Image (cartoon, rainbow, N blue to C red):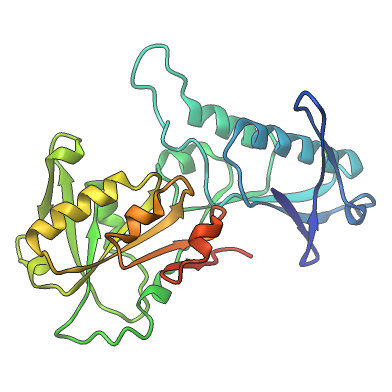
Length: 280
């Protein structure tokens, strides 16, 4: 779904769906008589499919037809296709490049994204601004002290650098890194030379995205080989609704995420599933 913000007011795009699946786009009344140099922000609450990208092109075309001299920004917290950030085999499509080319062709003044799965996104996307995600809300009112500092777990080498700069407010924390020695979950190793994990009462696994959840369930199993009684929490910027919540909550005490993707009714009704807003 797309929203357009003008003068701090949300305007919702009108869609028509035809029998064979074609989509028609119509601007709401508030946007049909735009003034020159108007400033509009398109918020993509969900931009994940080819249809969503085509709809975005339709929407920008409709706006420019009304007023060519308009300033446009795009907010797309979860940037799609970042998993396909290179060609690894002959014949493969460099999908991320195709998607960024489509968005670049729309000439946005700024494109706001949050915690992209690949750093390649910001190098390919014109006028890219990466939004800050604060995790301070996770640690608020927890009553940690010097003898009970939580452990932050980086599930791979790629997230290890990010883990050192996680914004937890004033709460100190220690970082433990995990490594997939052969790029495989079955070969995952917990790198903890100081024994922080074995002594910890509680830990937080941080990552950018949770899809089906298998990686984190496997990681939790490895962690509990080191410390069977540790309380585990999962913190991910993007939580896909394909994850098996029953399995996830059999392992994790709490799941923390953002509103970068729609939240399923099942997740929304669970008191241990916590969502913070990174955009309105």
